[in-house]
Length: 152
Image (cartoon, rainbow, N blue to C red):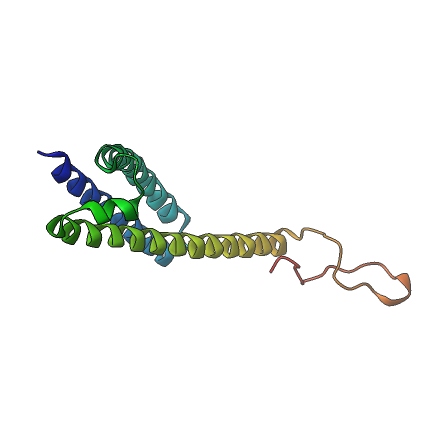
């Protein structure tokens, strides 16, 4: 296998791993209310991330060898038309996958934070956790239990 063929294979493998992470992120989003399922998906994501880290390291090493110190745009200009026709779509797909994964991860973090706030609110209601009331009684009367949680 030539260096060029290895580079293309690594790009394809990296795109496949990113697509797998995107699929796992979407599944996590659907299962956000099930803590055991979210934990299982997170473990699977961790396994894929370890693989992705190794593949990305290989891609960077191969690029350093083939680009000889040039940036990506400069390097693409040095490629022949056939090579550019193969490399550009893979590189564009890689960038798109990274953008989609970042957006998905950001949304999932927000959903998890909301779910955690809801669970905390529910626990406060169930346990009768006496926090400072949201409203107090007039004329300094004894504070009553508030059903308003400032976190939600």
